[in-house]
Image (cartoon, rainbow, N blue to C red; front, side, top):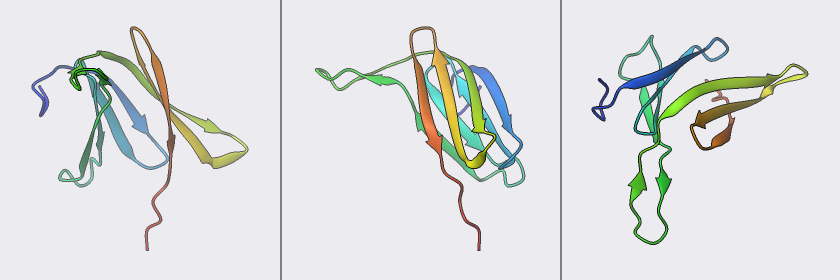
Length: 96
């Protein structure tokens, strides 16, 4: 079980940024730095009903990062459910 009391449905290891991506059956995405356990980012990817403002749970079936081999700074995270596929552009943090 995770912080939202849901079951994890998929995992993806990002070998470039060394982050673990996990998703659950309610529609939450977790970005975990396994080297610093307190560094966890949670994103709510559930669909929002525009008339009521409530969010609807949606099981995330697959998460994957696709890279442009010609430009490693161009990366996208793809998230798929039973009904939709969403993509998000990933930006690298510059560490000083």
